[in-house]
Image (cartoon, rainbow, N blue to C red; front, side, top):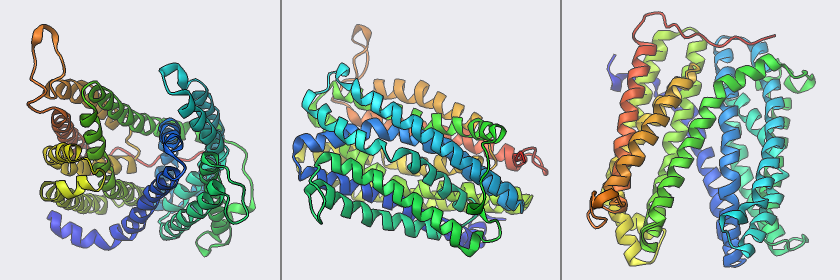
Length: 467
């Protein structure tokens, strides 16, 4: 079957999952924008405190989410196999795992906030950041449990209600910020601490909404999920960690690569750093779309694999990859023709805008490569293949992207070797990122082919659930 025909056949099923997930992704982005915009009204120090605070807690929280993606994958497989009780068992153990990880993550970010001044951070900035982080930390345990419940729902194709809740949380976060930061609606004026508390309360509200929905919805009435309690099952928890750790480390690795690149650029000029941040912000604005498609592919392929509909899974993969190329291609064209207007959205400094626009044009094909590789990763996660993709991605990022970007950007080399920084500058880093992602895409495409097409009966089976 041709790729376009596969897309036409699979489009209804894919978009039924992909559409709501996309809205959820942009709802999360909206929360960050709201926090930044409202913190800016408090002053530069508080705005900086939020920025530093997010830089501390977000990687830790993303690591937790990476681990909990294993709940989504295994529930999708059990749902596809028609094993409702197995999905329920996974859901209960996911709650245990989310709660424990949330408590540990809270302790970690509170600890990190106490010692950030060791790395030279401004004392007043860190005082503001510490108040923000302490407030956010209270929401982590129920927040992580909410993520687990979300994945429990999405793994069974119950996606739209979760999206509605995500939009409700955006509204709640905005109202809570307004009340708690500025002392409105009868609340005390807590400043930056109010911003963190609003985030924590929003996490709790999402947990309450998901709990209520699962308890009352007809989608879960047969399994009576909220009407009985299961003790912790370490065998299932081990399965979660086995499957989820490579995903969590992969997400963290990508964050670290981005941080290392930013640190290298920070040794050049302020304009270069600002331009790189503008280009990175543009890229992240578009990344939500392939990220949502990647998660949709994990759900769709996981369901079909669990049902043992192997041929239909291959058709779904062709449709998903065709859509990923179309999305990546559209964003690439947008980067090439509208780089200047996009850069102007994030800066008014013309020197920064021009350099950022140039970087966007150099990195335009980054969008195509990134869309392909993130969807390939999602497809492999759908059948529980996480270790090898993580190793392939990490090796290429650290052994290709960093060295090649270092050279192309004109960073200093021994004996005066290397390019001049005037040749490419930060554009060299974006060119290296693009090259890296195309290499990763080729490697992952080869693995997808071997997994789904090399043998008529694939060797990878859904992970069994311990009773």
